[in-house]
Length: 152
Picture 1 (tube, rainbow, N blue to C red):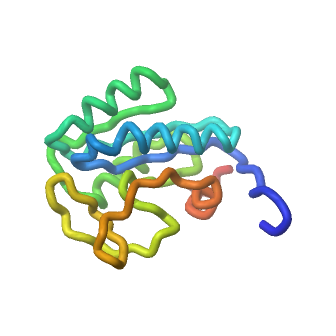
Picture 2: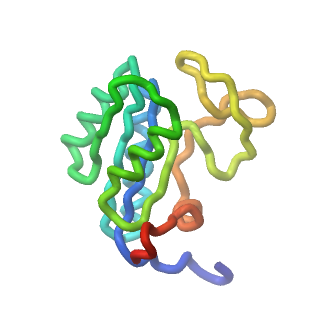
């Protein structure tokens, strides 16, 4: 986007966050995603997909949804895995443009899969240290925003 801001986004956006045992991150990440989407100036929703968490992820997400009607929670009774959470988030999306986001992924950082340990990050930097949660930038949202069925 030489010489200016990103082009405006037509349509409405559904962002979804697959979360498993993310009580330490979910509030901050949901607030960052909401703030980022507000900056785009289009209608949006944020869907937290609780992937069978055994911590307070669902409880905290439920409270966020009560505080902001643009935030919703959907839950798996057990953990069927990340891909299932992605499918659930996509299926729960009401708007034509979807954007999967994650509480422990920094889109601009080089990453590799890390070990899943209680309280740990599922993504680590190349130095092996956990990648700190970062809110998505509007530019990264633009590059990851497919439409369903060609809808705008």
